[in-house]
Image 1 (cartoon, rainbow, N blue to C red):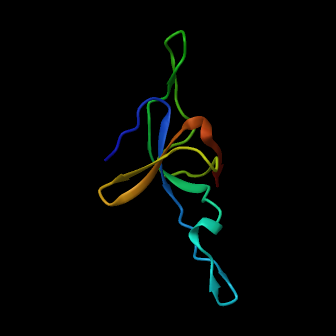
Image 2: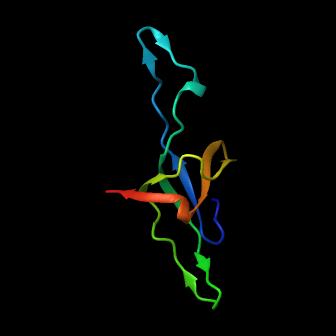
Length: 94
């Protein structure tokens, strides 16, 4: 499995359902980019100037909302993930 470094978090992005308008199927570029996902792995955290580590406030299994244009898409073992910084995560869905 992938292990994120620093304050990075690996997310499995929730797929959007196919949208239809009447009998027309909307093209993928007309859909909004997904902004919800599930945390798959969490890095150790950010290191402050004095050397202490600040752990991310999310944990594996959390469902989160993240910034629309955040992160880098990564494909690993035929699965697609999104690697984001912890500060790009805006909320935990409870």
